[in-house]
Amino acid sequence: MAFYINKDDLENKCYKIKGTIPKKTLEILQEDGFQFDENRFQTYCTRIFLKYYEQALASISIRVNEKRNILLKNAKNLGLSSNDIKVFIDELLSQYKADLEKRKEYDSTEILVTKQMDIRGNILDIITSIDSLGYDSLENPNPTPTKYFFAVINEYANLPLVKREQIFYKDEINAFRNAIRDERWCKFKLKGHKSFLTFSPYKISLGTNNQYTYIIGNLDNDKKISYRISSIDYLTFSILESKCKRTKAEKEAFDKEIKTKSIEFISSDIIEAKVKLDNNGMKIFKKISTNRPNFKKDKFPNNVVTFEASLTQIQFYLKYLGDTYQILEPKELKDSIKEMANNIIKNNS
Image (cartoon, rainbow, N blue to C red; front, side, top):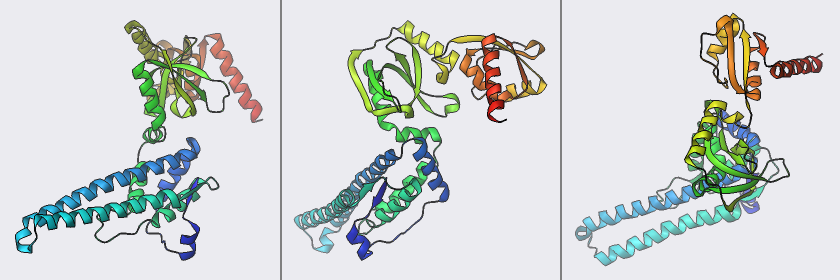
């Protein structure tokens, strides 16, 4: 996706670059484009410009009212009647609005969209394009769209990943919030999948360490599950008429299960696993809490930690511990780690 100014402007060279975007910002936009969806950047840019016009219109009204008050205060000295002031203010307001509409019309009709460039090229083209809109009419109180765009994009790049994800997936989050509020079933596909899922959303929440945004609920077979918001194909999303009411007891049970398993592993069954750590392993265990499964909070006799979580979550966490642990039970966890280790050896021999 890239923005281009029209051919006549390119030939007439009636534009010039007035600023730059920092390298860090470009790198973040590139990373987000690959991680989320490059096409969503177009939607985000559109929202930036719409907000610009909304704020510009509000700014115009304030500026015109200030002029009106000044003129009314000095009407006698200036020899102006109230009707003279009204005519002047109406003309000024009309001029400002016409100028703003001209920018808006130019933005919507002359900037074309294509999907032929990578994210870095896209950003550079957008800068060039919006600079062509950066003229100022006489006494125009508003910053150019370019300056506004630079400010918003740099502000975006300084946000944590989860906040940027929520900006990109604003429509999905709002749709799920509506479905949760109205207690309705939803239907959608996951990206890269062909079959539809019928899903009863329960809660939107942040994952471990507030890194990503998840929608939690259950499928029509009552299986509890969570999906990262960016994994959903929103083009296939729909809210169904059928209701999905939960009792207070069901909600309390759901909340307890989320707390026990953690959001990312809500679909897995809980197992109890005993893992013996060496001294270095205990230090790592106490230091690294990222994705750490629930465990029995005792004195860890002989450095044995008893985890109570899903098999998947325990497998995931053991990667942090390197070669500092020995699995005592269950056998399925020990076998799965052996298989993983054998595959690593095989792939790197």
